Image (cartoon, rainbow, N blue to C red):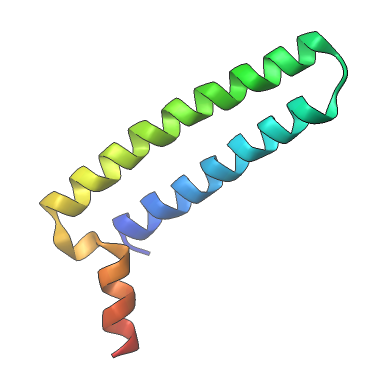
Length: 76
């Protein structure tokens, strides 16, 4: 697995966990739990944004790590 694939896989996992936290916040009636889940979702959102920035930087510096480009080459 390349660096680009690892970064995209991590992004996908983090975005999924953020969605889970948002879902948990909606499912509970406990205000403290809702606040905690929303705080976790906000923190994960910041991590996602930071990782997206890093992914864009890496792909800009090392074009061979671009996942979409690799997928197109594999299909050819």
